[in-house]
Length: 182
Image 1: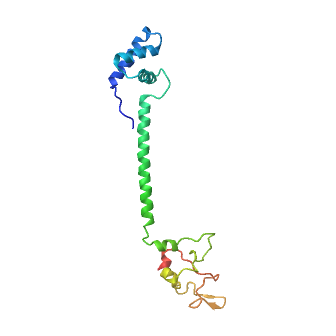
Image 2 (image 1 turned 30 degrees about the horizontal axis):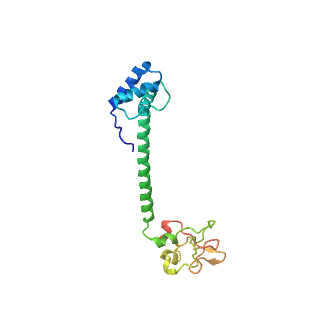
Image 3 (image 1 turned 180 degrees about the vertical axis):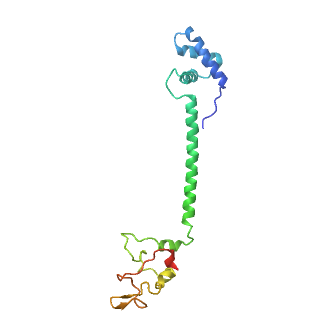
């Protein structure tokens, strides 16, 4: 944050007007600025030169960023910084609440997809062959329940009830959604 100026705005305007008025009396513009700075008690001539240049830019006599444009840029940068901070806070809160939405940390890693290509209608659990039975959810330990007559029709001379719980291609049944969990 910039420190406030030790010179009031009225003193600046007066100094710039005086430089414009006394300029014809001196050989160079710098000499006129030096004389005005000494009369008004301004610390350095360079300070007065910056005020004169900014006044010329504001008047349109010199190219550059006007005072109004620089104030608008400053305001927009401040607003941008505030919005970035708010987005960062919201992102952190969203990730915090998303990670604790299930409430079970061990079950989250169990239900994650295994790396590699997706196999159709196969168990998709990482290292399912090594997982302990007590770590698995109950719906994976129970054989799937089929309604009467849905899959239980005669297939290739064998009945698919009771002993044979496999699908039409001999694969394990897949869980499709919430309705399969019941």
